[in-house]
Image (cartoon, rainbow over all chains, first blue to last red):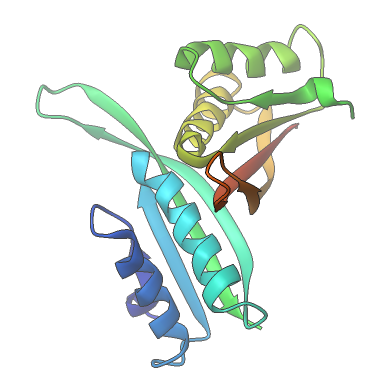
Length: 93
Length: 93
């Protein structure tokens, strides 16, 4: 599996991400797609996964694995900051 | 396991939820705690789980399972609305 199958959730319109996920499975025939997000976009990543898997690809795609983790980094002020991350692995049935 | 071990994430101050999770494991000696959230609070639920498990209970508690799902309900205008949900199961090691 290559990095091409990862979709990183951010500020774009919601349906852009859903369409990307659906197209990975349909047009590009990917066996798996990973939806990734950090911080406040985690809720959105779950929405994208649910809408793609249950509304658009119902019966064709399932949730294989969900991982949550944290990343630590130094912000501009030199302060140590922690941000949560999620990875949702969808798999063709 | 009883419903007492579930913590539902909402609008209260962040550390209230972290403290609740930590106390379930320490004071109440619970073997498992489920962190639940809907919609925009999903990101927060992941933050609570990460901070509780990695900062406060490091080495003592692990992520056992993460489930995401959707609930459909009718809003005040009679329109069908979908909301995503998450359940994060933490377990004493």
